[in-house]
Length: 344
Ligand SMILES: [Zn+2]
Image (cartoon, rainbow, N blue to C red; front, side, top):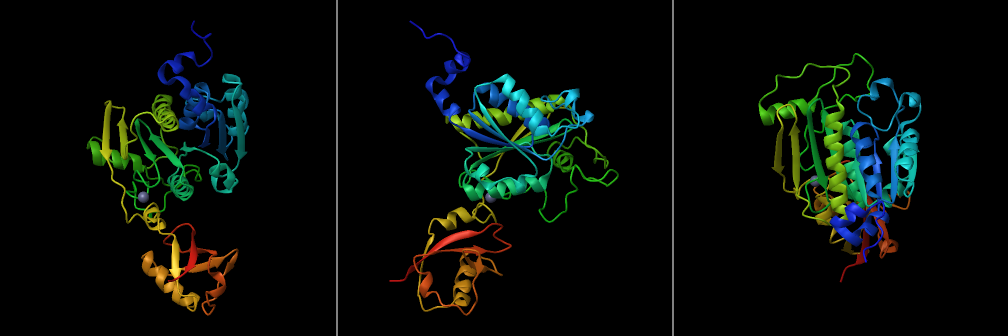
């Protein structure tokens, strides 16, 4: 006799008992606006047991053409609260935590306890920050973006697939105006520039404020991001290393393979981190240790920390043997922790 159909009956026909994996999973959604709201709906309906929503924005009337989770009555409310309310109605079985604020200010434990981080952000700097956090905590990052009828999606599995800094869409040293920048400030649409490179179909974009957006693209990108998230959580199929560009104006989908770069300033660290017990002569000083580390990480201007203290150059290492020290440097983008062990 077959079981009584439940809420997830139709999808269990795809993956059966693996549904439990979804119930136990935690997905952090950074940005619950356009793509983030569609992805959140899909993940809630699919029964992902724990969602963490982070967004610093409040609902505006101009959001309502594409941000599925908000109604006119929500105008002025923090997006995370309005979103959590709707998602809970769509699926009362799931638990939802919210953080009304910037991604950088959210408790790090939110990132640590997530299985997947999904980026529904609308700015490049935030994506790079999430990329670095994801690599640091070895979390899968599902990133997507849209601009007009152009969009992309990329899945970052730290140590396996290319991260955002392996092949930045734009050079990281170009200051990118934020979408929420003051009205009138000139804005460059790098997605459109990239689309022009790839498809050769666009005239150079005119600076505009704000950027064009339609719900169909939010549906496509948000849906694909949610689908990739489910594939990661359920271990279905092969997650490819690369980026999918979508130009919906002419229904072009272009997949570009990207191999992870071992010299990537962010995820390249993972290869080096394998050997993260560092045999050392206890007699040497921090200054000499810094020289070794600079060589190891191909960087300069390293600082060595223990606990919360920056260690003085003249300090000897003898009382740091078998302890974990932190290495910080602008080039490394986040601290690396290594255990010093006695050589020989
Ligand atoms: Zn990388």
